[in-house]
Length: 400
Image (tube, rainbow, N blue to C red; front, side, top):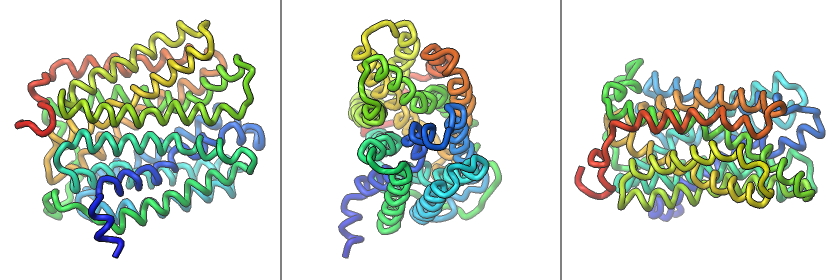
């Protein structure tokens, strides 16, 4: 009885499942201050745990892309299985958090599982909602953003409890997300795979100059995005200390800054229907890059002003992501969309590793000035997008 009801609202089901599944991503960061206090983990240790998730995600997406797994098996089943495995790995972290090698191994496994959630969520959206892809993917990436912020909310709402509870809560949410997608199933709007799996199927779209330009813009965006999300609690903690405010403000403000990306994604998705995905992607990337440039020069301003600037950065830093995915999907081979998006994700997320590593390693020495290490991402992303014309990316719903 529930399945027909669920299939009446496929986009809502997918984005809710994406929210729940991706809460695993930054689950450890949400309790980072507690881990530092209770277990003695340093900023560098927390950075390593974040980097390990990214590395697992990259390995998983490369496996999906080079084997054609995403186009050979039902996306809903891969998504559900990944949610189950990711929930178990994330819960297992609770048992070994004080043993760094084992903790890193379980975060690596969590990242591997996320590779079956995020790219497959995009394929599910395309299969169920083929029209207005940019607007639909905006909701999906918005929920990825909210899922990233969710551990901070879980920590803020459980400050009277041990740090293990927010982690277990994220695992429970992932299980619910997997069950929702399993009940929904795959959409009817993608052609079936030929069943032939070739090693480099996911790289086929790179022969298209338009796809290469879109991918280059996405790669520049990735260099900035996850490092900013990793640094957000550090930046917030600096301003909370300057204000002399309670430490309890840190998870709530961190959640707000990251979660504002949902509004940026959805607002950008609405604009893409009138102005095109390329128009939105360029302007969001330029706005976040400008804030990245300006912030270290403005640290003398009152903390309230800087927190507002961080909120604006959180709003713009992710708004271009669904539009890059929509542009990539439009130029990818239809029968290999899953593999193509997976390989683009893999390369993009590989670039997050040096960005996170550099900024977390240098935070104690450079403070807010580490943000300038992120500036090459938006600058290079805008540069590689130059050959594209808005005529090549008409507003959604118009003839292409």
